[in-house]
Image (cartoon, rainbow, N blue to C red; front, side, top):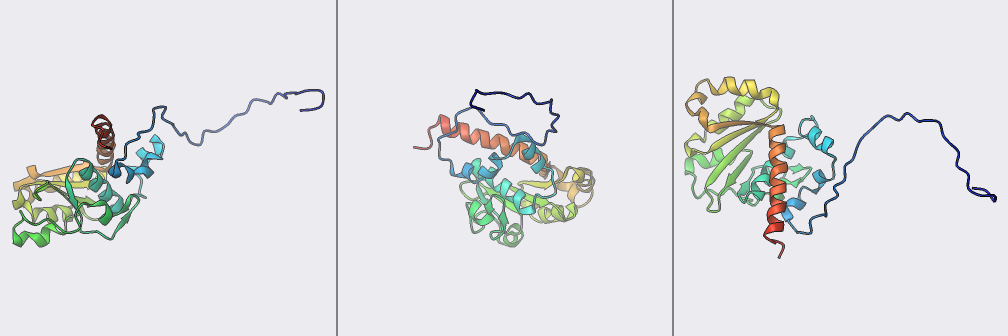
Length: 217
């Protein structure tokens, strides 16, 4: 800009390398106070590409996966417990995320309580009956997780192994061996990517449910 007026100088065509892309939603932000959703606000801040990467990258920790399972259970209305109450994840301290600080044991045989207490994450119904249990095999041998779950097989609940997709073949081979073969229908294998997809679906459901039912009032 000069005293004589405003002049624009044409610049040569620039060739820029795309580094990243951040997408912004045009929809109105939810005004509903859903405490469980607020626990995972950090993941909402990431672009879609980062969310996909988060499900697969090595920087995810065992505690991060446990936290995600706990939050899914909470959003679905289950009581949740982990023995790792003091561990910290990117979502917060696991003990703060769980609904239960002590293992609900009303419907668990006394001889099984010590074994159940060591499972990574357990979901209970409102009365305290165990519904689903989860072992996260992040760096350990998947066979060890199967063995821990096998010890509580008499509870007749779904037993989930959460691991990298590369462990799927190992899981399939192991559950077809003794002693797992006899209860292999009780075992379920899920990858981090599948867990993340379910996590996103449950979050959307919780927000829509809260909005539709006006649960902030």
